[in-house]
Image (cartoon, rainbow, N blue to C red; front, side):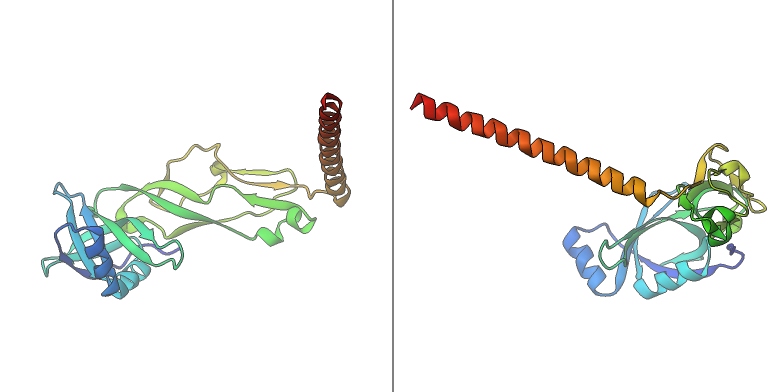
Length: 226
């Protein structure tokens, strides 16, 4: 469970807000547009080299030291990243200025480990992971990349709630303790599935027959009028 104990410096260039055509040209040149928020200042538009942004966000955990136009770096965190729905590439980023001595709210991924080793799954049960992200509060340098929970000895019929998740040191979980994280249910028997399919088929057949009878009645009525 990695945290932002080290930071990476990212250099960006300020820019004036532009239209969509200029933004597309910017992306084609290998740079990504973004906006910097927070710190008691007005939002600042910038652009950054796509490769440098990717490396900074991948290697720094939560905190990045951001230098705008060569100025003294200031700590920031990723607020939001918009991605291309097809290629998955980042097309826009929002960054947020932070103070390293003040806690902030963040959203982190929740990973479940040891699923295949649980007694319930070994017996053929189906574990459904319902909540995959958690709201937390922590200092920027203590925000984990993810929280990993060992599901342990879950049996068929068991439910995993947030109250069973241990928060890393320095991290406060903000969601309700009763929030359902995962359930482990019994496997559906093949006979039940086949019975449902058969029942649905019969209903469809009855509907089609009813439509056919109504159509035939309509045809007969037309003939008698003629």
